Amino acid sequence: MAAERRHEHEQPASAKDRRRTVVDRRLDPESGGSGGVNTGLERRRGPGRRLSDFRKAAEEGEMNKEQFLFLMAIDAFKRANNTWYPSWTDVLEVVRLLGYRKTLPSELRIESAEDWQEAPDTPANVRPERWAERFEPREAA
Image (cartoon, rainbow, N blue to C red; front, side, top):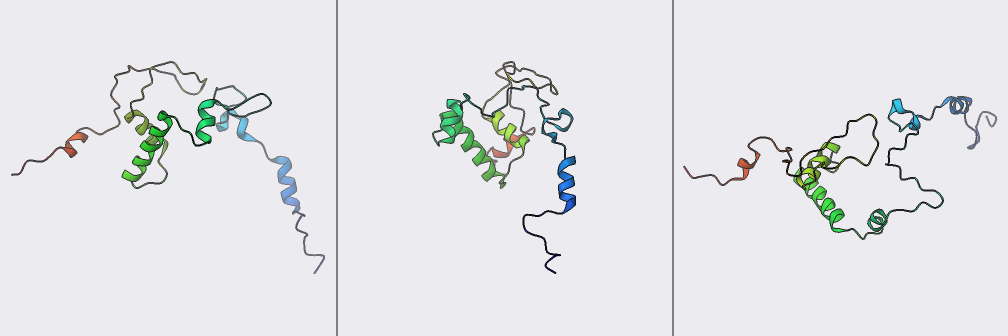
């Protein structure tokens, strides 16, 4: 029976073989990885690379007005919609309702998506038609 027991550090042969055949798809462009293309989104740090002041202050709990407003807006959205984890569409809705618009060319290089711009006064267009009517006072009949 002792011979049948495996030691904690031993692994079955199938696990050892699997490691030799596993492919790291994080850098494969077909599986959503960047494929080694510099998109401008990389945060990996190495020798001589430091966090930006924008990011460093937020990680240390010293948010600027923009970061704090965004955080409070997301928190308000989660409370109003009774959800803990908003979808990316929900986050984009909050960003547009905060007044952000795509007015400049992108600083990122995303090969699989087209860059575009809109006028600064473009409406958010995230609410259904007649949405504001829900909150108008009703007349007594």
